[in-house]
Length: 369
Image (cartoon, rainbow, N blue to C red; front, top):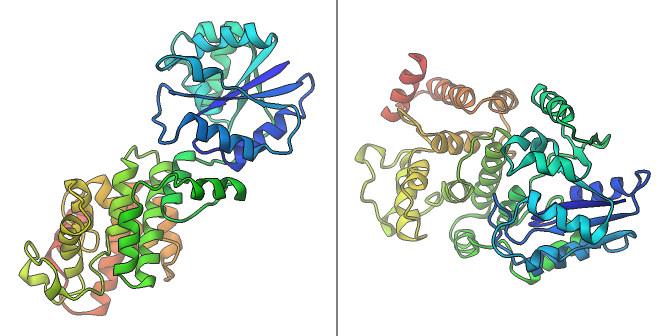
């Protein structure tokens, strides 16, 4: 039997390879067919089909009984599993199809799911067995599906997160030779001009903090399933301290409240100006996330809360309450923001001196909700 393992593979990462290696150990499996998609129905690919094929070849180099199919290269438009599997069965004969546990849970949303389960067995890789997973497994089994839940549970690695972290210079969970290919072909570098300019314009320790803040915020968006725009998170995170250590006289200070001048919060207002004027950011949501990342305010949006918290909790931060605050936000953005804002207020009270009005308003709102 040949097992079809499809996906965008944008890029292929170490867990993809681990899944292939596991499949090759299963009885009755003679070949694993990797099937990169050209136009996946629910995703946009920033790399070409040929580039993703190249990375797959690099990642599986040395593995036997593995093939890469260019079958989808010859299709037109977006194609669905129910349309592709019958054609693959004609080509390869006895096949099975790999899906993730989340895909099984969402199988009812697929186009013609009953056709899919009638074509071949499904090999399911789950990252945990939730009630929803059990319900889906039971339901589709009763509908006649041949579902084989694999013992191997892949680590929760996201190609989306990998792409954005590559923008930030991090290459975790990638084959070193794939990394070389990415760098040689300038892949996943949509914001390279902004990032290079920022790196040259602010102190290195500030840049490293900004990079960690962006990465931490991106990870929370994924793990908490917030559904926020990854591009906006990256821009707000990487640029949130773009005004730190800059001479204010050399930059636009319009829209900088007079009561913030010379205080520790001035840089958030200047930062929004600089992001707009000097880095070309026009998105108001991104600019506002920068504008209020230190003080907070009433009626914070989810993006604003995320950047506020990531600034306080990124891995480089080390203070007494930080682990407790991280454990809170790992469960809920709203609760995490509340805990962070109140912790910041407590610190400012104990430190003494004036607290900026926006912070007082934010804390008052949180206490009354």
